[in-house]
Structures are given as C-alpha cells and as structure tokens.
Length: 149
Image (cartoon, rainbow, N blue to C red; front, side, top):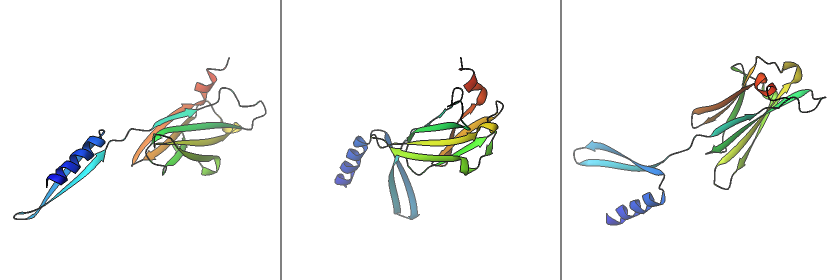
C-alpha cells in the first residue's frame, strides 16, 4: 500500500501540469473500485491565416491563403476551409503536419482561391478540430487591401 502511494506521489510530481482525477464506484456492501487517472491539461492551438498583400505576381491566376495552426496535441487533425460559412471544395485545398521539438505539432493548410472568385465581401475561414473542439481564424479580402501602398 505504501509503495503504491509513493509511486503515485512521484508520478504527480513529475507531471506538474497534470491533475489527478479519482472516481470511486461501489458495487455492493464493502466492495469498492477506485480508479485513478491523470488528466493532462492541453493548450488551445493557435490559428492564423496568412493572406496576400496585393497579388503574389502580376500574372497570378489564383490567390493562396495559408492557415498556420501551432501547438496541436496530435497530428490527426482535419482542416476545413469555409467561404461565408459554406464549406469549400477540397480540390482547392491541401495541408501538411509537422512535429515540433517540444512534442506538439504544427499544421499548414493551403486554400487556392481562383482570382475571379477573390471578392472583397467574402469571409474566408480556416477551421481545425482537436479533441472535438473547433478552433478557427477568419480573414477577408478588404483586410489584405488596406496594407497595399
């Protein structure tokens, strides 16, 4: 019994950002099951859209939006692009995931907007789903134009 308590204490000390969650279930008189689990707190990923200032080249036929998602806890993610809250076709998007030295993951999602569809009143949204929670960033064409000199 003392060894179990010592191991649990050492484990808790080594995981300083974790919480111990304990559940107790009673089956019948005098019989109990105690389950201890370590609940690790995760940090919300950071989502950022990199949009062009002006066009990439004067002869460009498309605009490339890049969604950078940092501090992901898993490489199993899904990146979804939306225009005005409508999911866009996957044929215009792609993505890559990279493992970082700290054990988190960074993902890059690309959306290729045909130049004739690049309108100032459209809102472009990059969404990533992690552990059932959706994180997102939005940008619109007029935001990109205000920085052009």
